Image (cartoon, rainbow, N blue to C red; front, side, top):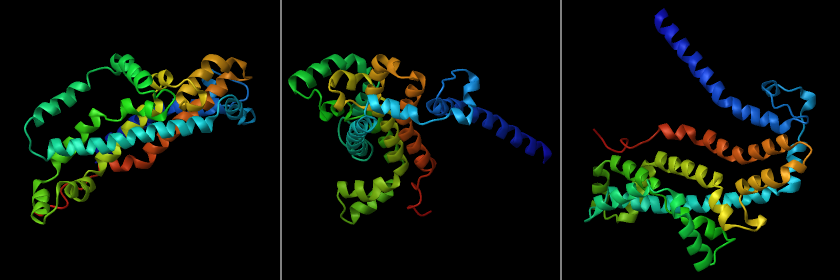
Amino acid sequence: MRRALGSKAALYVVLSLGALVFLFPFWYMIVGSLQEDVDPSIAGAFPNPGNLTLDNYTSINDRINLLQGLANSGIFTGGVILGTVVFGTLAGYALAVLHWRGRGFVFGLALLVQVVPFQLLMIPLYVMIARDYGLADNYLGMILPFFINSTAVVIFRQYFLQVPRELFDAARIDGAGEFRLLWSVALPLVRPALLTVVLLTFIGPWNEFLWPFLITKEASMQPLAVSLANFISNVAASTSNPFGAMMAGAVVLAAPAVLLFILFQRYFTTNDLGSSVKG
């Protein structure tokens, strides 16, 4: 009994130390964003309360519009999530549940697409979207290259394969069509997949820099990640506390992703795939 308790205590100590190691950069970033007089040393992680201020947030907001950047990032990310979830569920359902010739070949293509780096396609995409479609400095031009995500298709397919076939057979006997099956039977049982796809998709476009930087030239259309990069390159040196202003911008950029994960992390380990099948 004592040995088991000792092992459990040691496990908690190791996990706590690991959590501190991973959380320290976030703590340091938050503290750095609040410091009036910069202290980039390790001691700066434990500042004097009299040295804390919100002036860094005001300083960076005076040079780049944080709310406009957040709105642009939200529109860009929301559009990508919408396309990823809609097309991912439809394609994943078709690959997992429907039987049609060439299904395995299409799934192989979905896997193959994941090994093609986006940078390889960036120049032809830019020519097509900016020159042929005229969608430069446009939300649609930012969203289109990421509108369909093969990783989401694979995730949904694997979850749909776990749904018991009996549920689909029973619904078909009751006269349900395929869209009814997808909406009323399959989707409620794969909520962890939906949340996983939403979170993974959110992180990508929210932090995406290169493509929005290429496709947008107007500052009013740029997502926050691009605005912060421009601030660091061109404007940060003109502020009284460049380090604090950069940390403040990083906090604003990271906060939505961290908050989203904290709110929905408990759903990633739960599913009800077997709850509707008796026996």
